[in-house]
Image (cartoon, rainbow, N blue to C red; front, top):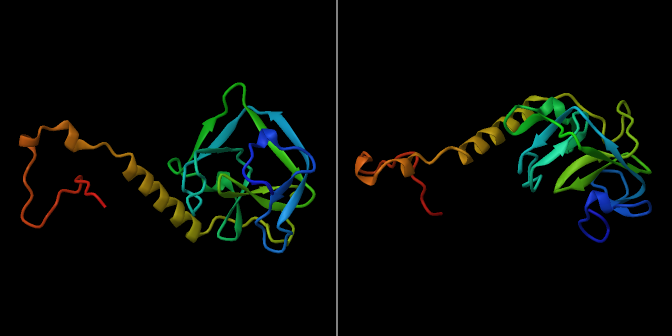
Length: 181
């Protein structure tokens, strides 16, 4: 998110201003450089909505050591991987990571998610000091994974003919029935 709205990372350049969402940090941080780095190895696919407030908007591919900010705390994304909501996969052969260099260490908005960027000092006591995964974030990721699994469950009623479906007792609906909301 730039001072002029959403922009693809590949179209960012030195001098542009990015929205910083880190407490105690100026609302915008100046880009001092952009690097595209060829990368081979594991990636983490963060599914839509997993990081809260419907973020990310679409699947987001991150390097394992990328910091994500959730509810004011910074976590290493690989520590959050659960195989459903945040899945590990191998980078395609022609994959390039985009490294955004900022004047300071801040979280920037990428597809609605707050991602760590800039010159990180991982042991600093500042506002983006990474913390270990705790019960609250583990529970959140597990709930998001369960919701994703429900969204992707096959619709078994479409596989059976209407006459072969059992009729529910009065007042009880089958769990697979989708009602308009």
